[in-house]
Amino acid sequence: MDALDGKTAVVTGAASGIGRALAERFGRSGMRVVLADIEARRLDEATEAIRALGVDAIGVRTDVADPSSVEALRDAALSVFGAVHVVCNNAGVGDRSETLDEWEWVMGVNFWGVVHGMRTFLPLLVDQDEGHLVNTASMSGFMPAYGSYAASKFAVVGITEGAYHQLGSRGSAVGISCLCPGFIATDIGAADRNRPDWVTRPVEPTPAAARRLAAIVDGTAAGLDPAHVADLVQQAIVDRRLWVFPNPEAVEAQRARFEAILAGVNPPIRPTLDANGLEVPDRPSS
Ligand SMILES: NC(=O)c1ccc[n+]([C@@H]2O[C@H](COP(=O)([O-])OP(=O)(O)OC[C@H]3O[C@@H](n4cnc5c(N)ncnc54)[C@H](O)[C@@H]3O)[C@@H](O)[C@H]2O)c1
Image (cartoon, rainbow, N blue to C red; front, side):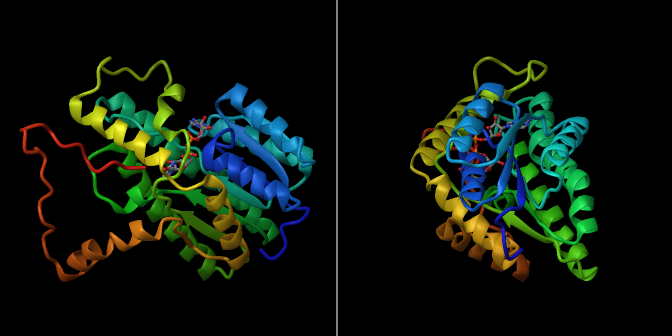
């Protein structure tokens, strides 16, 4: 897309972190903005803050894991602004991956949320032959780990690249980007605040899960400013760039793994026990 001014953006997970920064970035660029999030209070605050900048914005409470909720989001956006041009499937959560419920919650938000967003909004963009879709994956989508977060992000990387080829081979003017952040300073370390009641798990995390959570909290606290990520995403929309990698050092760290895969070489085993015999958590995924 060349010009964003006067167009409409829908951003999920817009009440916090990267999503909120995206909504603000788009608003400052003259776009109308639909902020979608499951957390009503923070959604209202974020919507008011963006309106206070003079941006034409609405907030729509949405559960991206529920397809009918995402359809209602589309209908609300269309009824207020008449069209949608940029869609960011960005809402996401992390967990301890200790129970099947947790796996289902994380896959429901991080993976199915993106599928519902693509199924609901892509036909609109394709029909008007204008627009851009942004799916938020993660560098965790390239870093093998036994856990729902990495599984969900590997899936988002795959379906986003797949849709890029489908759109391109049809000659569509609609663009698509896959946002793959490393650590960014957001509230993802407190994703548990949105854990639904039906997601059961032991009260105390395993030592490995506790250390992984602590590493995520520390990593995000020292992470990049979400506003920087939003600038990169906006530029990727204008440039029709598929990959958005805000943390270049995290990309470079993947080089040896990809070379080993291409050479058919087994990766060196990562230790699962540390020098004290304690379980080492999977690499912190963000
Ligand atoms: N912060 C990082 O270091 C980092 C790194 C890589 C990828 N990401 C990804 O970035 C995206 C945004 O996360 P963030 O870091 O800004 O975290 P955040 O917690 O600050 O924001 C995530 C938002 O998603 C919302 N949300 C959660 N469940 C939802 C649901 N079912 N429906 C609608 N909204 C829901 C939350 O209420 C919150 O406002 C996520 O997909 C996350 O996985 C973050």
